[in-house]
Length: 197
Image 1 (cartoon, rainbow, N blue to C red):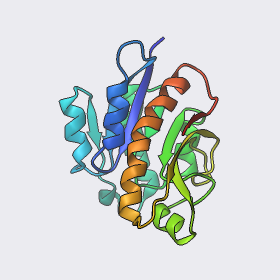
Image 2: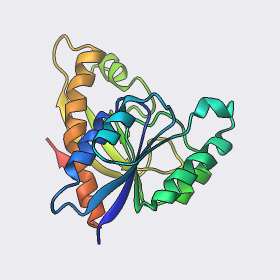
Image 3: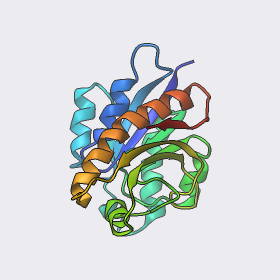
Image 4: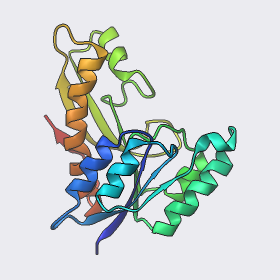
């Protein structure tokens, strides 16, 4: 059975594109919706160009009422009837009620080797700590921020002279490899972690 995937984005959607491009041929899933909290997100046009239905719910119109924003977003998601929800650069903190609705079937990618550096500014924090390697993690979303079960990681060496920007660019390349690999395995019913060098 082909699994239906909804992808939530806030920006350019580069991870969304990597996921959508991977869902072809014998892949056990297909993208059925790309939704954003920002109607101007560049990823929406990319999704449309790939033939994927899109939706936008501007979080700013809800004046900080997260429950009302999420209720509007859920309408679009539920209409697409996804089996899996992938957060791909979705920059809104979700409420426990939203997360509970998709419990066990919502994934996120985070630009650090969790449990190190949950939250923001991960690359600068890795540099400030003198870390020798950085990377990215795909995890199941739970009510605790960036703390759900780890489904995959990819590692990147920290190079002399790296800045947060240069490190982020190299980590992003690995995100585009890791997230599709994890989604393929997860959609096939396998939750064992994908570990890329």
